[in-house]
Length: 349
Image 1 (cartoon, rainbow, N blue to C red):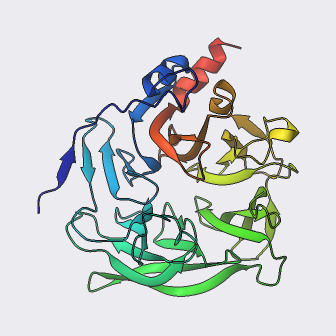
Image 2 (image 1 turned 30 degrees about the vertical axis):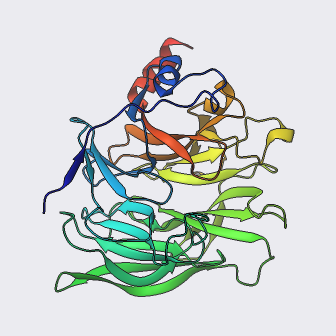
Image 3 (image 1 turned 45 degrees about the vertical axis):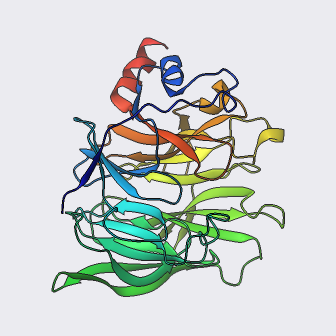
């Protein structure tokens, strides 16, 4: 079966979204030189196992695409089978994809209604010609994928418990074994939520997750980054800035740093309104962070930088630029070159 190849098109951002009337290219020209445009559409990027390609969704609930960093050729990976919308796509160490697929009938009037209840985990084998195979498990929001081992973790519906398991292949068919509960907040307060994020390299001895809590108006009002040691069950709190939003995102390959989305730069009245930007968090318990992007400051109330992931070499970050319209809502993907970033910071001290 032939793959569908798409030509990258320029999509102009409506002036009603940007008060400055700027499109993505104008935004890029206004940013420091270590930012560059990867795509002018798409959301939720992830790196493949070679770091030569970026996997992403065309929209919040859609299809999965692959873009080669060198050639910029874009290929749709999921157009050969019917589905009710794919919410998440993450690359496994062997190159296969872990997909969170809506297994219900898609409702265009309420497209995200199954985001927290009906996402079934599947494996799509590299080559992208076969149908995905169900793992028989359902997740709420995004799962965690090990960078080194065929191991995943996922949050159950209700976001009170996180499970993990090992992916094995029997006669080429993937399935899960050694399924066990990692974290359980089943008896905690009504408005507590958890989301699995990343196994900590290089040994996967710790699972990093986000702990949310709030009230009846907003169940995700506060969030902090936590980690649980998978051998001892010891829990470590890595961010502790009250009245702020701090969500774990991509982890660095050495396991010493984590990318987070945070609104800590906002004055207190403007926190917890998802006016976020990307930070680099040191995973030593100090809570030390470094801000890497300032989209929400350049375009207050309109844009943010979010959903960052680091490649396996630790030198490039792919992230989307998003609007304040909703969680995960983006209109394109940037590359942040960390080596160019360091050079820029040294020259502009």
